Length: 358
Image (cartoon, rainbow, N blue to C red; front, top):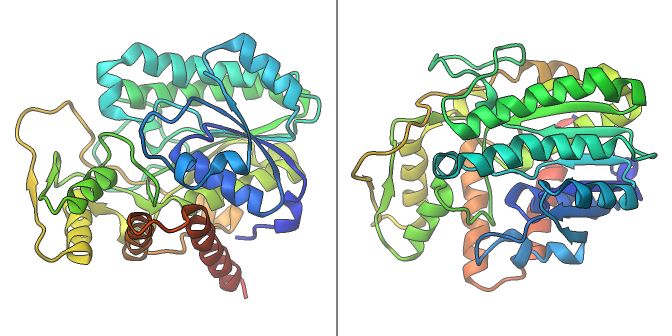
C-alpha cells in the first residue's frame, strides 16, 4: 500500500460526516498531508467527541448541515467544488435503527442520493469514495468472509439501509457518474475502534466508560464475532482508493472490502477481556440482562481483493489496536492535547505502512 503525501497537497477534499468518529480521524489525517479539507455534517451528538477534543474545526472548513436537506447540500457542494469526496455521514447504529427506522433510511439512503445528485454539478470533481458498511451483505451467519460480489441484504434497518446505499451507488455510477467523468467506489469496513469514540451503544465506548468508573463492563452478546480493526486501517484503504480513482478513473470504481486479517476477527468477550486486563486487573465483565433486538452473531470480510489490487494490508493486530485505544483514552483522562495525540498515532501508523514497503 502506498499513500502519496504529495498527491494530497492542496487537494480540495470534502468529508461528509467530519464531525463523527471516522470523519474526524480522516479529516485530521488529510489535513496533515496538506489537503484543503471541507466538512459537512451534523453537530456531534455526544458531549465528548473527537471533533471537540481533537479540535477538528481548526483543520477543516466546517459546515453544519443535514444531508437530508437537498437544497442546502446542493448549494454547499456547488460552492465548495471539491475534487474528491469521502461520503461518511450516516446514522451509524444498529440499535438506534430499531428505534428510529425512518431517520435511518432517510439519512443513509436519501442522504446518499442527495450527495450523489449534488455531486453531478461539481465541475472539478473526479473521485468519490462512498463509505457504506460490512453489514450491507445478506448475513447468512457463515464462518467465512463475505466477498464484494455477494448479495446485499440486512436483517435490521441499519444494515438494510447500507445495502440500499450500495444499490443507489451502483445505479448512480452506471446511469450518471461514469458518463460525467466522476469515478465512484464504495468501501465496506469492519467494526472500527480508536480513541475519541463516545457513541452510544458501541462496545468500546461503553466498556471504556465502565472502566473509567471501575465498574464491571456489561455486554449484550459476548459470543458475537466481528471484524475489529483500528480506525486508521480502513481510512488508509479509503485514501489509497481515492488516489486510484482520481488518477486512474473507472478501473477502480466498484465495491471494496477493508477488514482485518482472519486471525484478528474476535468475539466480543475476547475484546472486553483484553481491555479489562490492560486497564485494571480487578475489573470484570458480565452479560447484560434482558431481551435485546437481533444483531448478527458472525460477520467477517474477505479482503483478498484489496490486498491483491490495491496492495492494501492491515498493519496493526487487534492487540496493538486496543493498546492504541487505551493509550489515547488515558491521555484524554490526563488532559493531554488530544489533537497532538491523534496526530502522533497517525504518524506512527503512517511511518509503519511506509516501512512495510521497504
